[in-house]
Image (cartoon, rainbow, N blue to C red; front, side):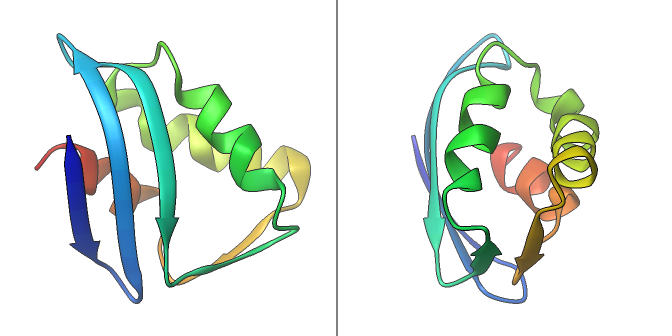
Length: 83
């Protein structure tokens, strides 16, 4: 499934779901993330996770890994997946 979601910046998601569980996900768009390579960590952490748990998982990773995201929030990501 492909979703374009307008948060502060455009958030583009390519993902596969099975009964609201994420089987695969690719996050891209017009946002900024620092350090850049941490987007892969977020994507990997979401595999096998239910959509309603995305915000908590992403918030935990952001805090633990000291990631800065400008352009979308963990709540935006969860909302985009629920469309």
